[in-house]
Length: 375
Image 1 (cartoon, rainbow, N blue to C red):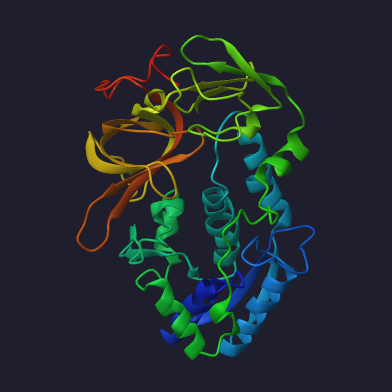
Image 2: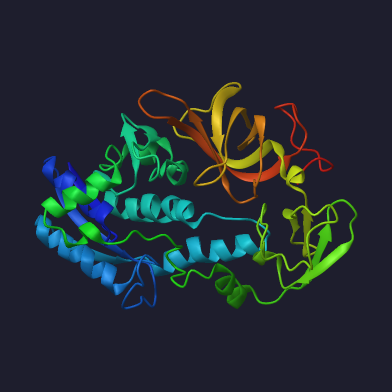
């Protein structure tokens, strides 16, 4: 096959491209220029998409003996990922920009251009497995990225390749070293790629500005503090609330709800965070088929953690998920990803964007959360 290897400049995408070459595919490497003003250097593991990363990708392509190009997607990335990220926080949500990048950039804009140029598939260094179009968790549980790939449709998955998902990360580095790839020991990027400083609140504040509001107590409604904008908070947050001290019972307070309309942040106890039901919009079923009834599954609500057994059912363009044990820290804007346990690696069933939650145990699947029960 003729395949396009998306090369970020890191070790994973370099080895993914190398494996595609070794498998006999006709491989072309491409680096995505996602910043209108890329920095000359990254700082350790902070950020990516710098000129250094582009150079690392080019050198890896040279070692592999494959053609290499740089494609400018900066404007598209700003519109679909950065602007969406800022708007989501301003709306009191907690977005995942990596998920949005996969949905809108790598497997949409990039893939569409690749197919138009005659490529059969897009190769990336994501840690996930594909088995006849079935998306599964990676072998390396610590590096698994199936959560941020669960927004992909059956059609997109049919034209994707994840060559490193069957191998633990240390083995990938060893393989890169054997191949003579200079990125073998390059640090992983752990921060949001377009915020290399790592200071998300400063980034958001510079773009949203000051939108003052109140921090109130969930039990009494009493005002506890003032804040500069709901974009400074996420559901489940414990630190940085600007409160004068702990609650009267001496226990910590957590952000339990965010109302962007009134700019009100509500804080309460750990028990106030418990969620038993999740309603999502924009459901994606990775098999391409919408289930005709309830589905037993395990739901994951954050990229790392937030797992619970559940029963999910399609509801309009979304889904209603009834949890069999409560979860905490469930925020609007995150994705709820459904898995089915499997000996060969958990299978991704689908995903949806979290639009609302219910604190009522045993809520009926067909009912959306009532406003009195929802957060």
